[in-house]
Length: 212
Image 1: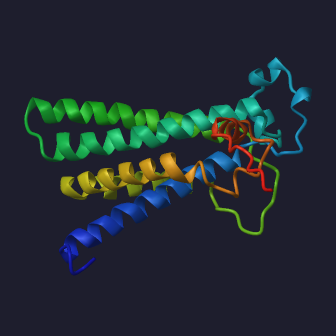
Image 2 (image 1 turned 180 degrees about the vertical axis):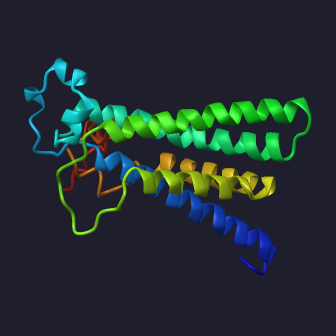
């Protein structure tokens, strides 16, 4: 590829892909740390669990499907808001001037306050009691900081890099949606998954061949 494109463009394409991968890993760490264990009996939880105090959750309450959904929503909002925050800071505050820069600064302050509130909401939810050989420390602060730093570095790349990255992502999604998901022998062997069961039903039926 270095023979076809300039070295700087190649480095930026590698950087945006690596930064996005690290950002998605941080998002997954947040999501998985607060999800209920598979052996958790979801029928034992009642509506009054939503009214549990912060002290009760910090004293060892187990995660439930409800708390897992709260963390999922907060994490996705944190991911999206971080990009809006740095976009406002980079293109509104740093490159702006006058009233526009002041307005962008106020918007960035409000979005930063929203990120803090989302982080507090995630912190209030009980963590999974499952222990693994390696676990990320200081959750949710380390993944949250990684999302903020990576999103800032990604937005500092050139617009041309973002255009190329978007085009390649669209091509990859088209290949996956048109071919990969329909011919995946690993995932289609999971009859318990309703999504892949639906894919099996949508696949064209092959007529049997009779041999004489």
